[in-house]
Image 1 (cartoon, rainbow, N blue to C red):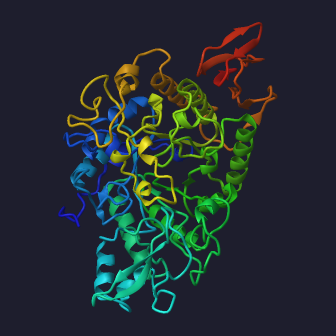
Image 2: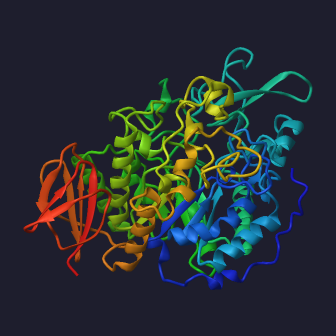
Image 3: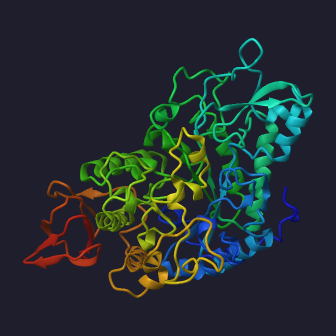
Length: 560
C-alpha cells in the first residue's frame, strides 16, 4: 500500500473556472492520456502526472474539452495499473496525491475537465481486503467480498466452473490456505493478480460509493468505468458450456458480463454524482453484443456516455459505416444519450495501422501494412468521426498520425496478455510506445531518461515539434478540425444525420448547413460541391459546381 497520506487535499473550487456550458459532455471531444507514455517529468523513463501537467497547454491549444487519464492509482502494475491496490492513493511512479490535485486545478484553470479511470470489477491481489481474505481462510467474512469457491473433483482439484480468463486460461486460481494445504479457488476474469469483487456483498458497494466521493471532492469531472459490463455475475456462476470463450465476447450475453444487475449499481452512483455541481459525468467501457444493449447503460438515471466499440471495429467501408452510424443513433435516441465515436485507444492497434492493412484482421495487428494508405485513411476517418452527432474520443498521439510500433522485440514487451500465451493477442504495447514531442533527444522530448518502451527511429519526424506550423500535417489537421467543430453551430451535439445520394463507396450526409463527404474507395470520385469548403483531409479540386475528391479523403462544406 502507498505510504502517501490517505486524506485528500482540500476540495478544489477550481471547477468553477471551467466553462459552465450546459450538457458539455453531449458534444465533448475527450482526449485519452495514457500517463506512462505521455510525458516524463523526472527522467526515470516512465510518464507521470507532473509530466501531464506540464503538457496541459498543448491539450488546450489542440482544442479538446476534457482529458481522460488511464489509471494512476497505487498498483503492483500486473496489468498496467488496472490492478489497483489503493483507490485513494497515487502510485509513486506517477507522483503523489498533491500532484493529482495540482493537475486537476491547472486543468480547470485552462478550461479543461479531468476524467479519471475507475476499476470496480476487480482489485489487485495486493488490495488489503484480498490479503485479509487469504490470511483468514475459508468461511471468513472477508472472503465473501470476492468469489471464493471450493473446487470440483474428488479433492477439489478442478476449477468451480468452466469460465475462462480474458487473458487466457481458467478464470480461477487455487489458493494455498494458511495451514499450507491446497484450498479454495477465487475468480479472476482477467489476470490472477486481479481477483473479481463480489458485488452481492454490501461492503463492496459501500466502498466504491466512498471512493467516488473521495475523487469528486478532489474536483474530478467524471469517471471512465473500466469493465462497466462486469461486476455482476449470473446467480450460481453457471458453466458456459463452451471453450474459446473470448471469441464469444461481443456476440452473446455472458454469465459474467452484461448482466442486468449492473444497472442498479449505476443508478445508485448517478444519485451521488448528481449531488455535485459542475456537470460531472460517467463514461462506460461496456462491451456488449449490440449497440442497443449498450444503450441500457446510458438511460437517463444511469451513466452519461458509453464507448461505441461497434464503431471502433468498423472497417473503412461506406456501407458498413452508414449501417453502424444509423444503428448507433437509433439506439441512443430513445434514451436521450449522445452517441460516442472513437477510432483508437490503449487496447487496440492504432487506426493508422489498422487501416493500412486488409479488412478482417481484427483490432490487434502486428503488421505494418501500407503506411501511406493507413495515414490517408486515418486522416479521412478522423474528419468523418468529428462530423458525426455526439461526443468524440481521441487517443494520445493519433493527432500526430502515429502508427502502431509493430516490430517491438519480444524481450521488451510488457503487455501481461502477451506472456500468457492465450486469450488476447498481447500486442497492445505497440500503441503504448511513448509519444514524440521533439525531433531529437534521448526520447524525442518524452523525458530526459529514455522511455519504458523503445521508440522507433524516425519517431522525431512525427513529433509535435516537427508538425507544428507545418501546412498539411496531421497535427495541424486536428487543430483546425477541432476549431472548426467548435465554431460551427451544426456540428457537435445532435441525434441524426440526413443522408445524401452519393456514388458507391462514398459516405455523404448533411447536418443543417454543414455537409460531410467521405470517399472510402481507392479512386477519385466526382460529387456536387456543397458550398464553401471548410476543411479536407486531402487535396480536392472544384470546377463548375463539382468537386473531385481523391481516394480515402473526407471533405467538410458549409452552405452558410
